[in-house]
Length: 182
Ligand SMILES: [Ca+2]
Image (tube, rainbow, N blue to C red; front, top):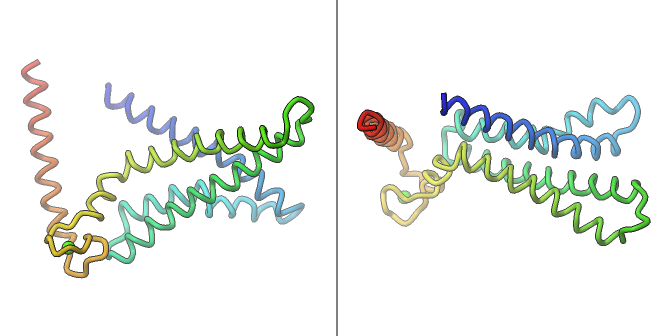
């Protein structure tokens, strides 16, 4: 039950951040595509919020080789930066249009960055939470030859995979025994 609440929170956070920054990104793309071309504005989300989630899924469950992992991870970062840039620009434009009688454009600019940065940090935190272990794994040096796993052609992910599963099983056992003691 508690775990279900945890998952629910994670989903609410992910969807919320996706909607918040995604909507601002979408506004920006709508601004660049007018009239009938608005459909393409939605495709633009593949470069930002939706793209970040999609690359995260690719990194975690699809990418096999090191190059594929590196590409997925790089694109995830690119998409998050794209999200930050497009969303902050849209927030800024809205701020300017909303009648900037009391605020100087610079103040609106700073606040736009802060708001978009909050979204970016939430996005990074969600990425770290869902794929952090895999990312750390990719940047470890398991065979100790000085080359990180993700850059190392000698690295065998299958071996690390079984090792990881047995470690997870160990933790699961610890957890249940601790639960029983309570
Ligand atoms: Ca290595």
